[in-house]
Image 1 (cartoon, chains in turn orange, cyan):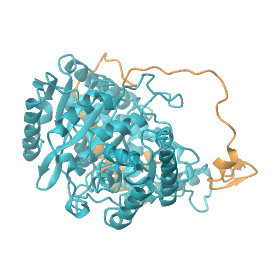
Image 2 (tube, each protein chain N blue to C red):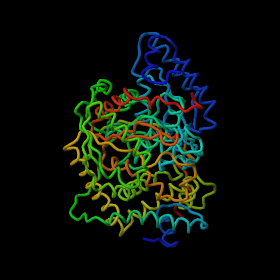
Image 3 (cartoon, each protein chain N blue to C red):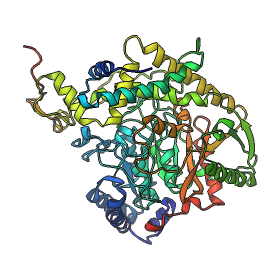
Image 4 (cartoon, rainbow over the protein chains, first blue to last red):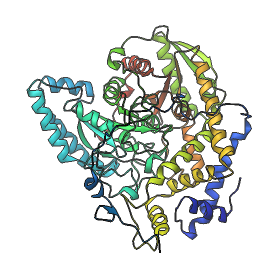
Length: 95
Length: 483
């Protein structure tokens, strides 16, 4: 499996990752070699095998719908890059 | 100097020394040796001394908990309230955690002293500790060599006597592999045994916390504190925690230990093989019965693991977006630019590789070929172990195919780095407990032996390791420069 430089740019966009144009070739080579490793999975026919998502085959535990957290907005926003009047500020999204 | 948790506990209780005295000793050792080893990202002197004073006051009142006054270090991915928790990433370089991980709460509850936060591979992604924003950690046995990863700082700190014990996490071998490369003992418990709340997530179906210490006896003490059901972790095991200390010293007469032929095949360094053979003979002298077994799908574990781990990491790391906490790029032109540049500047190369592979594997049209396929193989790998445990009590093999390698030796080739995890990652896929203990040296570098147990049989692992450590002294070896 070999990825082209355009594939790398597309995947980086999907992952919302900026990568420098100068590094694209290197990523294409590295990611292709990882995918070659991953392709070893195809040596085995696993048709009909039930996928394993949780190693203990556990199912999601439910809890009572009760409030367990207190309001810590000021504490949490104390470490935010940019806040105003209790809101997180980001560049304008809607024109 | 005294170097065991159990020994220090006895000394503190008997009033031979105070927690402040030993905490000051450890802080002085950190100040002396950390510049060469780089195993701490943050040294929390003031917190440590305040906790030590509290511990001494409690001891004076005759009140002591399981670890009162014992100085430990914590991997810098456990959130610690009011203390920088970086995950060795630039993206969290300015992150002061606003709450404690359950593991940290448990250590506080039991009176332990926190010396600092240890270095690691960024977001626990790596096998050499070279992927840290804060630089590589050096192996105390030879500072030109890696300590292993991802919990390399914790392992090196314990090996060099800069902490009595340390916490770590293990997603594919990140406790067992550095324990092996640094010549100490470490245990990864069963998935769900130790709470993941506040433990910054890498691969949520694989991640598990656990302790490092010199001996199995000390690991039992630390694991006791770390373990237990936690309603705040949705995959926490609702299962009673046995008394790990009480399980030690039960002997291993008649214990059936399986040797998987795949773990002793091509690819294993011959020197390591010979050291492991000697350890097996010691266990036989103690009454263990050795049985040959097979784990036929071992070869599939690396490709399967990297799909599962990378897919889960790409999802987990989407939370680092430059909006609510962590690094934000300067002057973003719009929201997409803010996301992309904050993440691009904040993550290192290996983390970016893994996020991209994960995003690719989960993207439209590829999900079945990668993630679903990997989950199917994951079941086959688990079934191998289930079959083996029908006929044996424990499984034994080397922890790693090689001893520590030189810093820089594998950095240009991510795939060769991944192959370091061949014997450890299948346990994370299956959710089984495993531990590494030191059993000798090859060319001056430590060799680790891995013991694998059935689900929730941490006691069996600790007992077997303790029995071995009663007749060997590899776990008591300290590198010359740090004696």
